[in-house]
Image 1: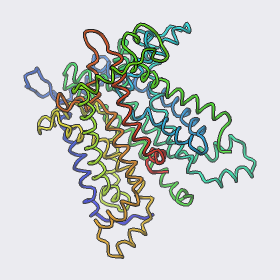
Image 2: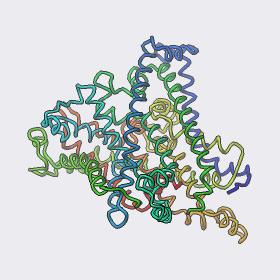
Image 3: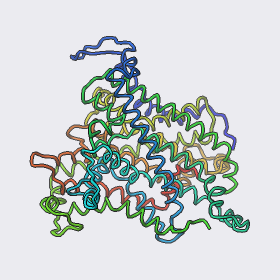
Length: 301
Length: 268
C-alpha cells in the first residue's frame, strides 16, 4: 500500500506532538539542567559540568558502583523473566480451547492480572508469600522448605520473579493467541495432507506466524521489566539489603530519598539513553519484518 | 492439529496459578484481623463485611476510588481524541519526519516513570495543576497517547483506502468523513485503545502518587494508610485491594471479544 506524500498531515499529528512534547521535552530539559549542577541546598545551584556523569560511569565511586550493580541486577531480572514468560506464554496460547464459552472465560481470567494496579499486585504477593498469613509461604514452610522473602536474598528473587511471571505471562499468551488466530485453517489442512508432524506444524506454520506478535511481546516485556518499580518495591522494598534494588528503585532512592538531584538526573539520562537504544534496535527489526511480511499477511486476511 | 496434547491440563493449571493469589486476597478481605493473624484458614470461618463497610463509609477511603476514576477517564478521553487524527495521518500519508516522529512517540511509551517523577512534580507545581486529577491525567498521556496512536494506526490501516476515496468523491468533507464513516468503521479499535488507556492509567502508581497530595489522592496511595501504630490492618488492605480489581474486571468483560486482537495492537 503506497502512502501519498502530504505534509499537511502534520496538522493531524500536531495535537499529539504538542501534548507529548509538553510532558516529555519540558521535564527532560529540567533533568538535563539538574544533571550539570550541584547544590548545597537553599535552591542555590552551581555549575558542575559533566562531573556527575564521570562519577556515574566510574564503578569505583559510590554512585557508579550502585548504578552498575542495579543495572546488572535489572538485566539479569529481565533476562530471567523473558526466558520464562515467552515459552510459557506460547505454551498457554497453544493450549487455549478451540471454541465455545470456555474461550471467553480463559481470556477474561488471563487478562485479570494485567488490570490490577501495580501496587496491589505487590500487596497480593507480599501477603501470599508471608510464612504466617500467606498461602504460598505457609505451604512451602509446612512442606519443609525454609522460605522467607524478607530475610533471604534467593527467596526474595524467587518471589519477585514468580510475581512477574504471574503478572505478565498473560500478555505474551494473549499476543501469541492473537497471532495463532490469524492462521487460516487451510494451512493446517495442507500440513495434514503432507503428513507433517505436530512439531513441524509448530516450527513451520505457527512460529513464523507468531513472529511479529512475539517481537511486540519481547519489546514490551523487556521495556517494562527494565523500568519495573512498584511491584518489587512493595514486596521487598529493594531488600534484603540491596539484593532486589533495580534501577528505578535506586533512582527514586537517590532522587526523592536523598534529594541528590544532580546524581539522579545524570542517572536518569543514562538510563533513558539505554532504553532509547534498545527501543531503536527493536523498532528497526520490527519495521523491517513488517515491510517483508505485509503483502503476505494482506493476502491471507 | 492446531492444538497440543494435554492442553486442557496445561491451561487449567495456569488458570489456577493465576487465580490462587487473587482468591487468597478475596479470602482475607472477608476475615477479621483476629482470624487472619491467629489461624491459617482456607476460607473465612467467621465471614465479615466489616472491612468493606469501613471503606464505603469513610470518605477518605472511597474518595480515593473517585479520584482514581476521575484522572483515568480524563486521560482516556484526551488520549483517544488526539490519537485518532494522528493515527489516520500515520496510516495514510507520508510526511516530513513521519518515521522519526513515530519512533519518538514510541520511545516515550518506554520511558521509565521514575525518571519523570521529579520533573513532573516541578512542572505541574509551576503551572498550578499539582494535586488535581488533570495533573495525573496529563502526565499519563506521555505513555498512553503513543500507545493509542500505535493501536489505532493498526486498525485504520485495516480499512481499505478505497473507502476514503469514494467518500471524498461523494463530496464528504474531511471532518464529516472522519466522524460519519471512519470512526464507525474502527469502532472496535477505538474500544480496544480506550481499554488500554484505561488499563495503563489505572494500574500506574508512581506518577499518580507523586503528583497528588491531599485532594486528588488516588486509591493506590490511600492504601498505604493501613499501616498504623497498631500494626498492619490486613483485612482492610485486602478489601481495598479487591475493590481495585473490580473496575478492571468489568472493563475486560466488555471487551473480551476484541482483547486478543487488541493486545496484538491491531496488527495481526
